[in-house]
Length: 225
Image (cartoon, rainbow, N blue to C red; front, side):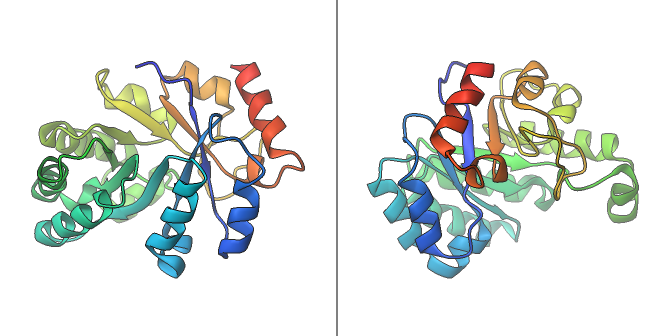
């Protein structure tokens, strides 16, 4: 899958003014933007509209996880915002994932629908405590749900791509760092390492948003690739 814009910048701010100030400092031709629960819960569709007006495509990272009917309706609402990508949490099961795909079809949306596998913050021990199995086994269970529902791809660690074994799907990988700082992720990789492991899109947050010159930081990453 060819796409020159490999980078998705995680807009992890707690207020709209800071978010839009950052947006004004970068070029929409260099990246897409990820809006998560913090900004969307506080500002709703308004934050989506503001960023769209500045020419950016948006990955709405809300990880829907509920009964199938509720997820179907939530996805319909999300697709109506003309977002580029939306995600669900595959631990909600096959019926829920299928309902999300039905919403995409019913909306005639071109948005990408991707599924969250095991969160990148979870270690092997965490997965045993939560799911009763090691991380590898849980990944395979959730992979099968996603493949059966025919979603467009997966959110996962770059380390997990080989386990997911789905060459026709896209892989969106958080936990990407320019410098070795894990923050909330169990394992982190550089952009080059992530692409070598099969990543399609790289989610990068603080390494760009906390940079003194975000635009130059983005250009530098592309040069390294």
